[in-house]
Length: 186
Image (cartoon, rainbow, N blue to C red):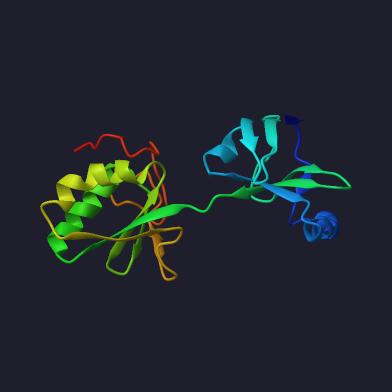
């Protein structure tokens, strides 16, 4: 197991560009893919895309982000990649059902985006958990699960999950609990 305790630099820094390009051409750059939640952690047990086991032990002031170089030598490199968020896209044909869905998503503090008449919910857990939470709405109404994916649509506009709390900026993606099991409050 490779033990790493510092960030060497960042892939977007011109100081490292030439070395990383040369290593990449020789297929000597490994990647560890982390979720947004993992980016805030400082102690992680990881495996690269090529199977190298890593024990990451960073100082509190280390900035772990997309493109962080965890290891760089003359023969290889290990770089962090941010995992693209997954989305559950729902369509509703009735305005009353759309309001109820929006209200419910807001009470759940889910991160959402609106894309025309579709609501995209950012998945921060298992898809099945979100579908179970939505079951009471989808079984009795005309809520259609359109797609899952890494992006809800090219024209998506970010919005808060309109739940009536004045403490959030009006156009930010946000969540209090980050969990599909966070109970609604009325």
